[in-house]
Image (tube, rainbow, N blue to C red; front, side, top):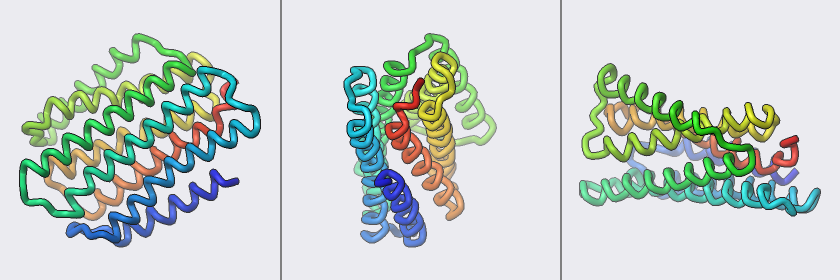
Length: 242
């Protein structure tokens, strides 16, 4: 029950954040966003506690999966809040702005490495997912650079590496479903990974295409938080693997 209460609260605080979020930033939207991000971490922790109460966490793969997912969510929270500091403080110093961006991307990248590891340990890993991820990343950047004419500049290489992790997470989740069967937790991870990828595609339009419309900002955040809460919810249902 607590897990679902946290989900509802997450939706409520996300709505409030989007209502108050402006291009000028401010402490109120920053605070609301912080609470929303804390809530998806709390959702996973609640799911872990429920697992312990109901069945215990004696299985090493299960314990590892839960721990890695929670750590990955924490990294996502740090990355998201770091990127939002540029909006909150409206820094005009290019060097400081770049530091926020690099640190945020690094935090998200580490988070995805933790997600990928969690899926590989608990649901299995297939080497072909790497080839799929490389192909998908190449296609994304071919469209972004040559069709949409996005200007990545100094962030091109970090963006490619990060996109590779995004697509690898999705490919690994799908592979996990194929290997073990498409149970509820792996379906939540697949949908979460797909939404995460979509949210960052939208974010790249905001960052590297100069399109910071209100609609794209709302779509980006809705997709992002939906992804994180679904990933967090997989911890609650991990007993349904078999």
